[in-house]
Length: 440
Image (cartoon, rainbow, N blue to C red; front, side):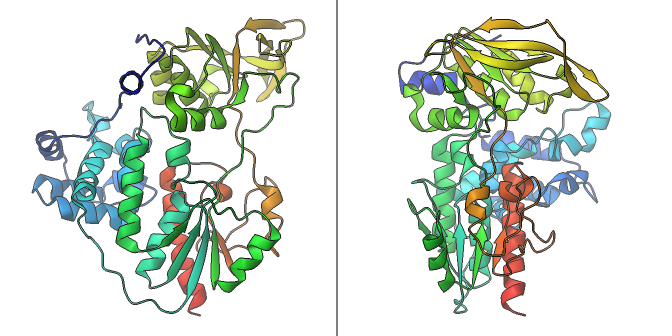
């Protein structure tokens, strides 16, 4: 089990957050690509939400056609470099690898993907040439994976594209919400710069679209794509959530990604939740020098939402699990002093509390990893835009067109929160939906 001390310099921060999937060197890439069986009807391709021709790009790496490999990847997924690092490959492409049935380690597809695209980005090799603009303009709200992917595909189809981003950096949760031991911000920025130079869309940073007046300005565009993701961490509606040192996991991870050493962590931290975000927040606290980190989830360990490999990552840095407990209150005067729980059991698939089983787990920081809110107030400002009962944007499954014909949407605002690769797939497919709509 790894032990960490609080980093006091950027060098120590980088050491604590050492990359779990470092970039391969050419020799490693050659030998790993040699292992591939180049399956016909490869299950890894079916398992990829963007449908990358994985055997093809691995064969191209093996024959030293790195440019061809990168082109194969980017033809399907404009976030090819980032997804090589942040995708849950263990449950997607690598999880589907036929070697898993032979008790042989699966092909390291993610790192091979990252290897090929890294080389192209570093050398700034032009993979695409843009057509003449067709005279039509599309506005995109949000420079996350869905929005940027939509922008790239629309530019290839000849549209002028303006992306409006509320923050001062691109790529949404790829920068703000992915743990730094999975990908460094610098790597994300490099790919975003490469894509913008390659495709020529315009990004307007610090330009939130947040009210009716802002939306009215978008009437000058022929179509609009909404890729706004999700909002802040949802409240769990218990007492003490406003105490100092009780924070949302999304906000905590963003602060850590942007501020590094200035991020405040407690000596003993309780992370409430059982999903992948909870695992990231817990792992990050441990790597920032917290002495004790506890994951607290209201169901059994086997019922947690997180992938098993994410839980293993957390355990490897000393995080402890506490299951079948439900938070009742965050306790303390002005600051967090503990979390009051009640023990639970499952009855007919539902969580039931056990009377008289309350207890307080002392801590000086509580992190709520309890999901993110939907941005329903903003979405309600768009004329004719209908939402599902759960606050997700209602779209056509093939075209991603909303109930307002000029508006299309994708990513977390539509699927409620999935992976970067899912958002990238949505954005590209929506661009084609926009193209069909504008050329009826």
